[in-house]
Image (cartoon, rainbow, N blue to C red; front, side, top):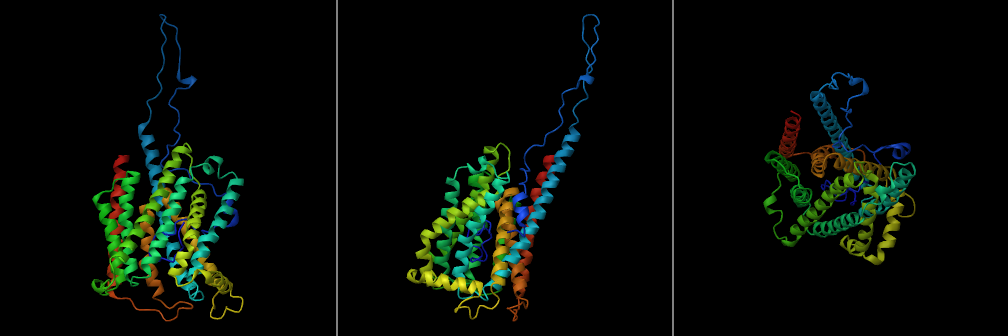
Length: 426
């Protein structure tokens, strides 16, 4: 749900999960959803078998040999193994998400080489085109028995709210971005993590330790330092009306709320489905569908923000499609298409699927941290000479300093989680 990568540094903006995973057609229809890692494992029954009892009629009394005491160390060992397996799954999923996030950002920049005149077309293509793709995948998984009737019957009102919030976030973000200097946008976007922590506490009832809160703030500060790269941030917003940075912060707030609602959908579905795991393509499909519906309602407003009069939008989209496919009279200057745009679209979908899966098995905050880690890595890769971008760029010492702060923030955030798990097991 979200507009792909048009807003570069918003980790969960495109969480409808074009945001395919490098998954093959067969794997999409046969991949079974993992069960909720928090659900209890079926333990062997402690009730004694027939052989555990010996009956002796003696003095009208019945003697019974009691079964062995339940082996609590064995159960604790199973629980510890389960937690360790879930931790490894989250680490692997986070690494995949970071890798795909970096590829997504780099390929978006490369895709804009041929599509430099049509970024608005690329954004709308990912928003509306993915709806058809997601519902097609959902239908195939439903026919394969992976998606059940109970999953489809989940209340749609929550998906509608998610769609409204993300569409509003896109509209507010584009409105303010048109009035703000470029370096200020990713800096203001770092309020996203703060909003996520707040909404996670209010909506999901989560509690975060001081180390976790400090870790999230360090991640945000690290990104600000790395992106600003020593520019005079004090003068960056001089002469800018207060309403525009406030609107950008509000955009981050509503999209952070949408990401927490997605996590709530997974948590609530575990109860409604009696412990079964909700398939992520249910969330992808209905969330993307409602978002596309509300973006369609805002389309005249959004096109005007991008300097495209609504009356000229059909001809603009037609020219954008020609450049995307590198065909037609308007295809001059579209070198690299359709390969680069198609690589971006495929990677973008894989990234979003991976991101939503990470929300499902961990939390929206963890997903956001993983996506945020990709920002300095992407900047570094884009500073190197690349195909279609041979010039490269130099990075200031502030970039390295900010990256170190970001990594320290991630370490701070994860230390108490492991400590809490160990204490629960012991």
